[in-house]
Image (cartoon, rainbow, N blue to C red; front, side, top):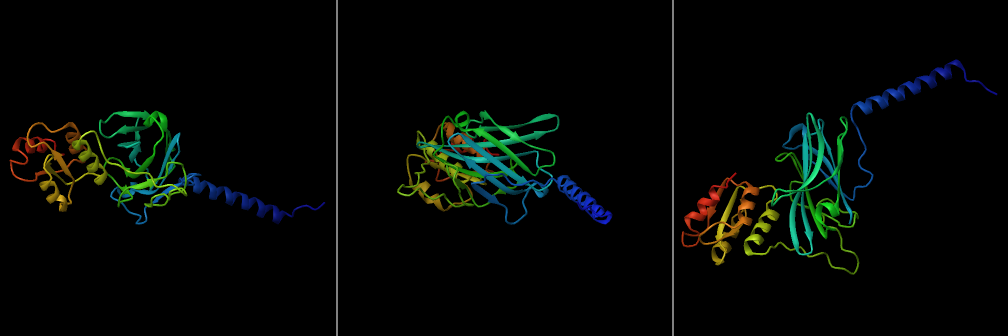
Length: 293
């Protein structure tokens, strides 16, 4: 039976000490592996963002018939809050939600989903947040949050309510069956099937107009353009305007609730009527101006 020499024992002990030191440094830096499952992965290729040191590095989304899992990695320090904008589809109805993770001093961390239209919280979720972690996680029950499985989902990650956004060029499609999807690439349709139809609509032309506005400008708009709902020429002529959406309004009278809600959501700095007072009366324009952010 051989025995280790004193030199060999010293080298072995030294290697163990070195390994412990390396692991300690890694732990102190808060390095954490990405989630085990990341069917849809979003990356910040530029490495910079409007939120400075709190901008996003990477996001992961997984959706099944029962669960919605969201994860995000941040540059140190991690933000006090972050959200994922959700454009959902059930049947022929499109609804916008925000999944929000909030942290504040003296208050337990919280994850929830809020309906963007009526600003009502639809459900609470589970979250994982550790002081040293750059990865943070939210998990939601699909049935409790949305009332049933989603046929279609699009996402945008955002720090806080007006910070760094990923991606910065539009919605990312998420497969509803938990399968692999690309960054900003729609998931392939199963063999022999057509991709799901996407409809932007509502119970009235005003609700349809509001749904289109939210879809086209998920991060808000500089302007909104008011066009008479019962005559198309003004709305058609305004199609070249690109600082915000065209919103259908009555020629005169109160603004419909759907239009009021979408103006508040988009927080534009200016409302512009398309056409003269015979198309959109001054009272309608005044009401819209009173809602500006």
